Amino acid sequence: MGPGEALASWYSGGGRELIDTMTVDLRAVGDAAHDGHVTGIRAACLVLRGHVSEAQAYRPIPEPVAQSAWTEALTDYAAAASDCAAGTDRRDPALLRRANDEMVAGGRAEDRVTARVTQLADS
Image (cartoon, rainbow, N blue to C red; front, side):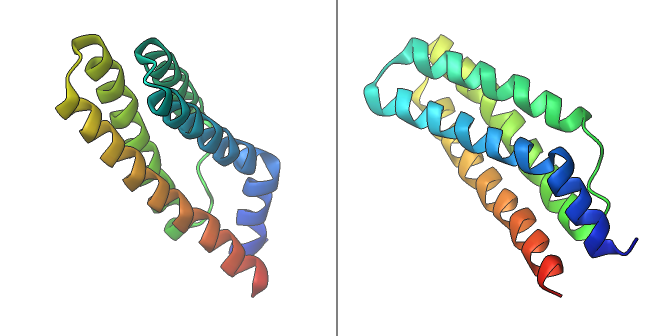
């Protein structure tokens, strides 16, 4: 099995679900923030943290470029979830801004994973 096939297998065998779950979680954090619902923000961040842990425990991506981006995304999301929960507990705007920046950075890294999957699938 070549790198493209191995990556496609990871993606279709559960990886895509993990990526989609992160997207849903990030949207939930954003929706709660938009509504100004501090308890909802905290709850959404804790859900994100749990899903990040699940993704970190899942098998690695069998392609180094995609795996590097995925590790970066999960690291950013883990930091974001932690800073978000702490920021809501302390009502600390600086921590919440940092959590937002980490979510954005994680999203960019996640986009590189998806781009790599597409690139190898098309080759």
